[in-house]
Length: 112
Length: 115
Image (tube, rainbow over the protein chains, first blue to last red):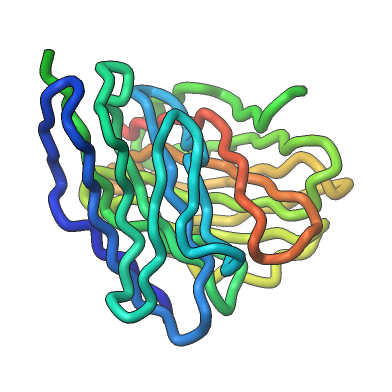
């Protein structure tokens, strides 16, 4: 079975500051990992995905994530936050079945 | 190109009524998924279609929920005798036939409110 834990339901940063959103996963098989972003009243948009090709994954809008098997983590980072990054972020795992298992989400607020 | 579309975008219904939610996947995508997003439960998987077959319907919460897919394209999620706890955003996603590592492309969702 797979599961995802996102530490921090709300994260607040200043514009220009580092963004760090934490995700830990549990999977009985080698996982595929995803970060999605959801803007208000919209669906989910893929930011990046880990599919075992490279442990450091770069995505859209300047985001990246590093897969660390020893820590079962897949934290999302961005060096410098922009106001437009304010949204809810979901980490998801897929392994052994077709469905995505999502974390509870982290709402990111960016302060001017 | 066109993304996943869902209709209606909003649905308000009375407790006990039946509702149908529609999903149009991206053309050529053989896999289709339904998820439910609610405040208390987060994002939950409901059902997965490969073509017109549903090999995994383990997330359907009760027998009031059913789904079908016809022509390997459009899917309908039906909720019978709606209850207030069914209020949520219902998201549909599709993905191409390239294996488990590919992403799922999500539609904008249908917001269901049961009064």
